Length: 144
Image (tube, rainbow, N blue to C red; front, side, top):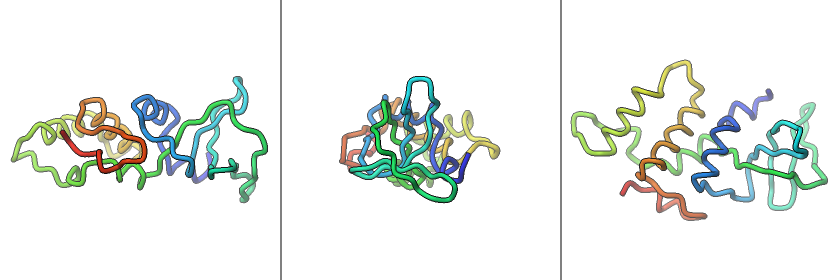
């Protein structure tokens, strides 16, 4: 595992985000497969090329992968979370505050990978209907 794999959620969480409609924008990190029998590896993608980090350098990949999954960074996930999610107050119960409290009690432990915990939070908020994903429109990531 190289340093970039610690900056994005696991493949399984990224797959779930993709299923829920998380935008697969052309730039950024991606989990990609180049053959059915090969495991996913992390690549950096621009609009035109895929790059693989190997031996301290980025190498251009000349062929297109057979499958890609956007691997959002912490910043990309945080842009989708409601602005007040970090400052929710359980003493003022509202549906999202109760939902967040239940999520945190269930999912958060100090040993969890922080980026995976944030991805799980985003998945939870999407599955419970508190946010919606629209391609290229982060302004719609608001609670209903």
